[in-house]
Image 1: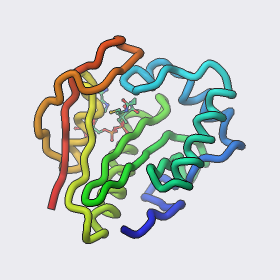
Image 2 (image 1 turned 30 degrees about the horizontal axis):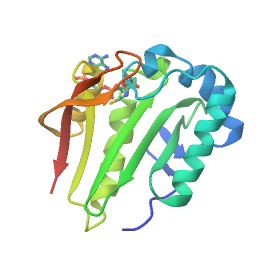
Image 3 (image 1 turned 90 degrees about the horizontal axis):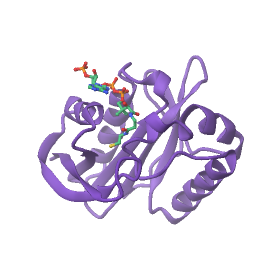
Image 4 (image 1 turned 180 degrees about the vertical axis):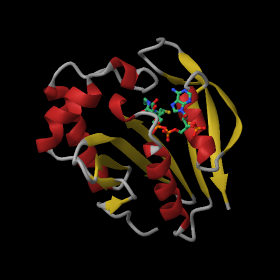
Amino acid sequence: MQRPNRNWETRRLSARPPSDLDARIIFEEYASDPKVTEFMTWRPHKSVKDTLEYIRRCERVWAESTAFPWSLWLKEEGEFAGFIEIRVGATAVDVGYALARQFWRQGLMTEALSTVIEWSFSNPEIYRVWATCDTENLGSARVLEKVGMEREGVLRRWLVHPNLSDEPRDAYCYSIVR
Ligand SMILES: CC(C)(COP(=O)(O)OP(=O)(O)OC[C@H]1O[C@@H](n2cnc3c(N)ncnc32)[C@H](O)[C@@H]1OP(=O)(O)O)[C@@H](O)C(=O)NCCC(=O)NCCS
């Protein structure tokens, strides 16, 4: 499969791997916010140091090609908006994402995710793009439906979302295939 571009754009967003210079804004607007992390697999960052460690992890996974995380920025205002990340298997791509709270409900993740799906299917060996979300994460489920994914079922006791419970919780599995 072709390697994803480090930089890409949608109508309102530009995407690029995060850098150390972004750590403070990512921490303040996003990673420290318990509402943003509620359904995520990680706990809110306590200091910029945690965010710098996350940025190190982003650099490492890009270098290893095990995952491709992009920070998202409003093109016009230059504001930090959130993250989207893909993991690429032999024939499938799976996606994760989150936005800073001030940018929820403006159609931004629908825009970013549609572009990622389009890019994934531009690779002839990719037949499936998929994602999971907690069964109580209504916003995320709706985004997945809006980009044309279908709900395949419930993955019972799939993932620990430590901000909600120490036990693994049920998740919906969504996909789009060709
Ligand atoms: C989930 C998330 C990415 C949604 O992104 P978004 O840019 O706000 O979503 P969009 O504006 O593209 O909305 C798409 C649809 O979902 C709906 N929606 C968004 N948030 C919603 C919510 N909390 N409850 C119900 N519906 C919601 C929108 O109304 C829209 O549907 P509509 O066009 O029929 O009105 C964002 O809420 C977020 O970052 N949440 C925290 C992190 C997270 O949960 N990530 C996903 C982990 S699986």
